[in-house]
Image (tube, rainbow, N blue to C red; front, side, top):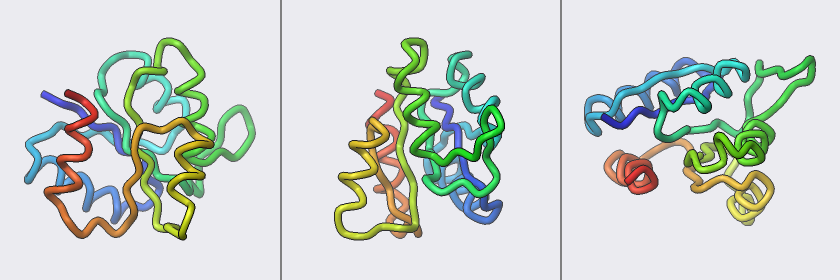
Length: 130
């Protein structure tokens, strides 16, 4: 069973993603915006792919506020978690953002909110795992 870790600070978005992935995609879902937990899940091998919100309002690491780009950089810099696929999710989709975010973070994919095509959303996630 594929497990998706959703890193998202908006409970409504979390519920929407969770429902699409479990009901439509048949996937397992975990969720947290706690950076320590994200790193723990990533290292433990409990999750197969991470959906990472770019703008995290409440996430702090070692006393500093961090966003999804920073957390992804941390995951990609660690040999233990570098191969874990990370998909950035953002509502701030301006021209050129996708390329910048992917380049900055080293993420494996990019999805803009709101998610309109549920099947495409699931397919994009699953394609990175298999």
